[in-house]
Image (cartoon, rainbow, N blue to C red; front, side):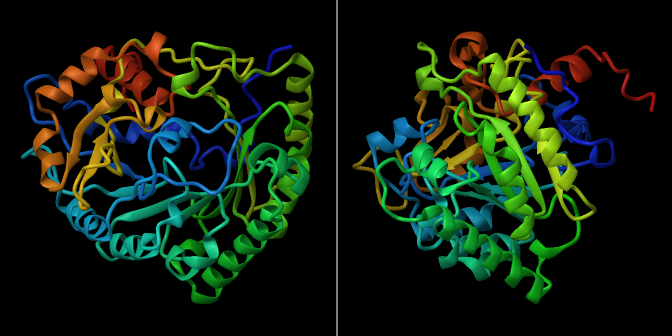
Length: 395
């Protein structure tokens, strides 16, 4: 049994934050990606404040980092990053400034005690902020999180029992109930403040995130119903993928009966939709069996975004950090652009330099890469910009 690609969203909700066609808006920025020329700074960067987590998800794509080190970006460095991003200018003929930041992790970002202050400083500097969190520590940063454009909470289950099985085996704490309460409190506060997070746009607000795994397929509808009840704007599902460091062995797959159940559950969940709630099953970065499908030859996404991370060397100064070029391959030194540096300007100096192009030339997509977050970026570069397959100027 294979899946058709009509499950992702309903026709009425086609223009949504998970639709990769939005990347076409960046064509004129990406046209400037040429050897020997300064490249515009990213429109978006990711920041991982801390390499630490309080859960143990079966599919964790940061397990390698978490096993090797427990580090964080110093508060002073987070301040410097927040002040640097709106001023970064990668090419002299391009406007300055990174426009958006996704705070995520090789770990749980809200375990960093200064994460809320980082959110506020970015927002005050005119940078849009999104946060991906497991939800367990929202209560420590609720006020600051209302300054975000969106907050995505990786719940990944429709019951406490399944949550514990997949994300906290052997745990005794009712994380599931705590996370739902944290979400409800965040939604309520944002509404009472008329905060940015509460703006009535489909891409804003709190998303209930659901990584699809073989043992949680049957709880999709229940999870979506819960998401709507506690005030989430979106229910956002995508299949879990095999991490980059485990590609050599079978890891995540879905049997035919699981694919059929997936379709049934999504169709049922979609009946919950209304003008304030959407159900999105994002599968376009996978094939019809929900296995990775990286249909592009080279990774130009390394010129489109990047990741600020805690330093990789235990002996590095307190203010040090790393800057890598791929969120899907955190912890892979082959994609590091700046290592154990203390000056944020080092990132701007390295951007589009010799090392940057060496990283690009060294990537072997088929052999080295897991399911690619930036598959659509790369396809747009190859087919729309490089080959002009869409004759995009003829609107």
